[in-house]
Image 1 (tube, rainbow, N blue to C red):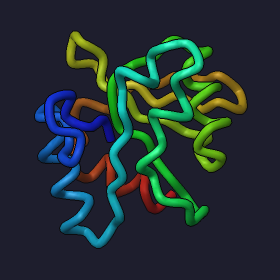
Image 2: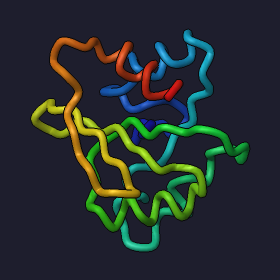
Image 3: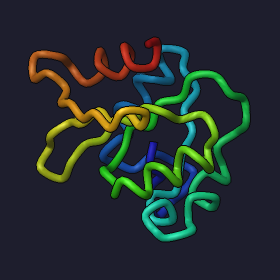
Length: 120
């Protein structure tokens, strides 16, 4: 999840509830520097605090340009699917492999959606 830009050791306030829900459900939560991620050649810095460990990883955060997702996946070495919340409040799911994008169904609570994505 994106780190708070003023305090990189906690989740961005817009994602704090989801970070807490994921932790409460027993999932590890890592924070990325979204500002660095949005910069050219910033993906390595963005994931510097993400521990190595492999396995399934899900990014839940702000929308990025497509080249930034590709750089993120390459730097993180595990991400292939991203969850993003657009500025207008619309959820997006982006799959890097085929470029498909879809929205979270309005009838699905964010915590359930996140939990399903983490266990997929």
